[in-house]
Amino acid sequence: MAIAFTSGHHPVLIKGNEIKAVNQFYNKQIAHYRSLLRTGKKDSKGIHQTKRMKRISEKRNRRVKDILHKASRKIIDLCVEEGIEVIVVGNNAGWKKRIHMGKKNNQTFVQIPFRTLIEMIKYKGEAAGIRVVVCEEAIQSKASSIDEDQIPVYGNDVTHAFSGKRIKRGLYRSKNGILMNADINGASNIIRKVYPCMPERERWSRGTVNVPVTCI
Image (cartoon, rainbow, N blue to C red; front, side, top):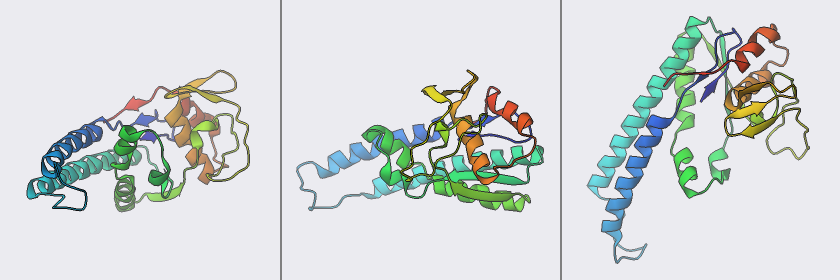
């Protein structure tokens, strides 16, 4: 998850390595026990889940929920420290059904409950007096946030020309050759989509091109 600030605070990246490791271990365990359970049986015959497999799933769900609670708490604490009054969260309804990154990567992304994370951010933010706005995310990382490219709408057939481009994974180059983290660029565009006339553009644009600080 990428976090951009309008306060001038360094951008923040919250890594998903821990939750990815939990899911990988879970998938390996379930695949092992399922192979033992289903060997020599047709898909329509016999049981598909044992009590042990159910316990493994419940343990995985508890661990993932704990990770999401910690991540959402870190986000809210950062916003409180910076005096942030509004959090803008990008979300595309049903995007998990449309992704095609290969079986392994698809499995990783689909198993991360982003909707749950958003709900945690919402209720914790509201408890801290911070308003949380959820908007359609679209393909924000293609537009240059510091050059104020027009932001496309997902599913819109209109062709857009962008001033900058993503030159490799995690790195975006603006039309003037400024390099920035591609995910932070996308996060900044999500803010622009909700607040297109954001004041003090220069100050928070500098925050966009700063080197992100990885939290967790």
